[in-house]
Image (cartoon, rainbow, N blue to C red; front, side, top):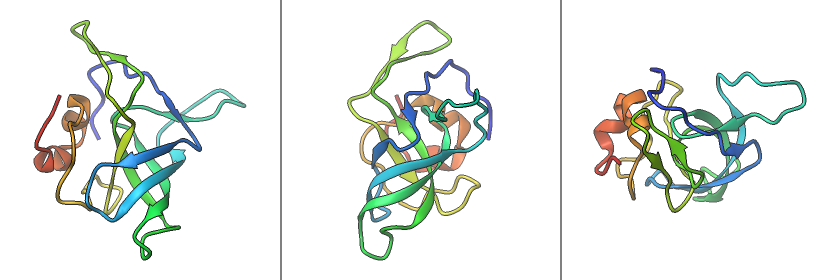
Length: 133
């Protein structure tokens, strides 16, 4: 996992529900924890674009529902600033489900765009993505 090249605002706290944009069988995820996140006592950990999270599957196929899966946030509504000064925001909050904690995606097709920060940080995700913004 490489560091990010931009200052991403962490806009998705624990308990937030995000849509999935892959064909893994999950439809809606609920964020349980954010991996590698250090915070102040009493503050909810929050995730941004490119972060690895553990999530519970809320809606989807019966065999994957109510399971805890690793996921990567690929889009967020809250705008974030890139190093060149541009600001980026998306229409929705979205994540992709992983097979393992190393960053290999479970799905084979991603719907919609994926942030450039995710493609830089997770090379296995970048291979499957068809549109990187």
